[in-house]
Amino acid sequence: MKSFLAARSLAKKELYFGFTLAFDSHLRGPSFVMEPPPRLEFSNSSGGWLDCSASGSPQPTIDWLSVDGTSVGDVGGVRRVLRNGTLVLLPFPAAAFRQDIHNTIYRCVASNTVGRVISRDVQVRAASDFQSRVSRSNSIRINQHAIPPPPPPSHPQGITSASSSSPTHSGRSHCIAFRRLSDSPLMPPTD
Image (cartoon, rainbow, N blue to C red; front, side, top):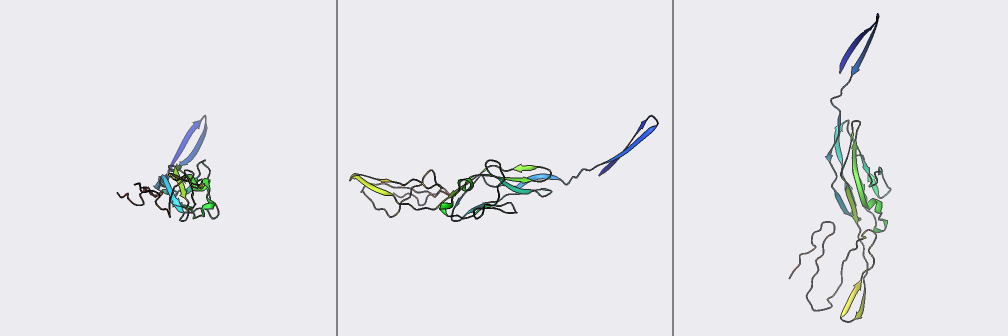
């Protein structure tokens, strides 16, 4: 801390004033220690979370923003924002899927009296477990086809899966299925 004293003479009147300048060298704006990843995909049956932490002086507070820039908070039984900066997306039944919570973009914000930093966009996407039956029709014996039902709301692009099926012809064909959450094959193709 530095003090200065200034004096000035004004035609036989003297004016004295003093002031103190305070420079706090310990003040630091926030910077991320752990920035959330650019993408989070999780199962509705397990839930998911995003960690975010920052350092600075004074210690920054962590908040989360939605895609439109508004602050997000707890939504009973669906989403929690913890004091440590973690955004928790709780497990939920497929019927409780919410586009604005389970398939959206979030941003982490760290702020203190010195400044504020905002993380990159985090694309969040929940994959719901579901079962459906495919109706099968035989319009002509040679031309068999299956008509899938419309996809559930949590999978607007659709998903194809098969179980309890039997071969309908003796020709050679194969299908490779991929795990949506990891993009790895369920089993390698065999010849």
